[in-house]
Length: 171
Ligand SMILES: [Zn+2]
Image 1 (cartoon, rainbow, N blue to C red):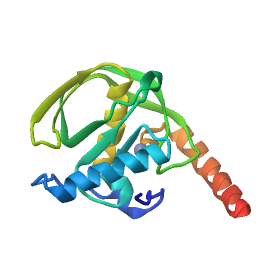
Image 2 (tube, protein in one colour):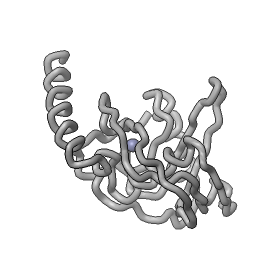
Image 3 (cartoon, helix red, strand yellow):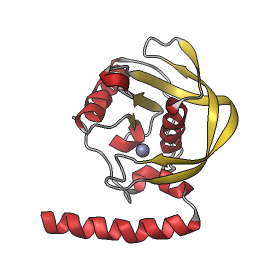
Image 4 (tube, rainbow, N blue to C red):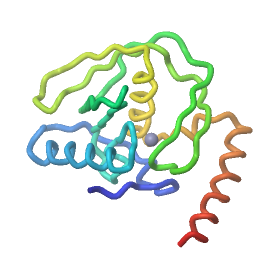
C-alpha cells in the first residue's frame, strides 16, 4: 500500500515526467497504485498522489459493481470537443471535499501506452472523460480546486479549515 499525499503537500504541485522505459519497477508501481486506489475507494489515482513524479494513472469506475481497471502511461489528450458547464468532483488528495468544476471537456481522445508498451487510443464522452482529465491535471501539478470559481475557492478555504479542525479533534 502506498501513502496518499494530501493537499497542501507541495509534491502535488510539481510536474510529472514521461516514463521512458516500462520495466518491472513501473509494473509493480502500477499494481501498488491500483491496490491503493481500491483500498481508499477511489475511482482514479495519479502517481503524483503517491509522491512519484512520473506519468502514470490508474482508473476504475467500478460501474455496476464490476471491476474494469484502466492503466494509462504517458497519457496525452490529442483531441477534444464540447464543454461541461459544471461537473462535480472530489479527490483522494483533498479528502472530504466535493465541488463543481467548470469547463471540463465532454469528448476527449487520449493517446497513451499500456503496460506492454502498446500505444493505445481511447475516445470517450462519458464520465470516464472527466476522470481522465482530472488525473492528467494531477500530472501537471493541478488540482480540481484550482478550477473552482473565485467564490467557490473561498468556500473551499473555509470548509477545508473546518475539515482539518474536525480531523484534529478526532485524533
Ligand atoms: Zn485527484
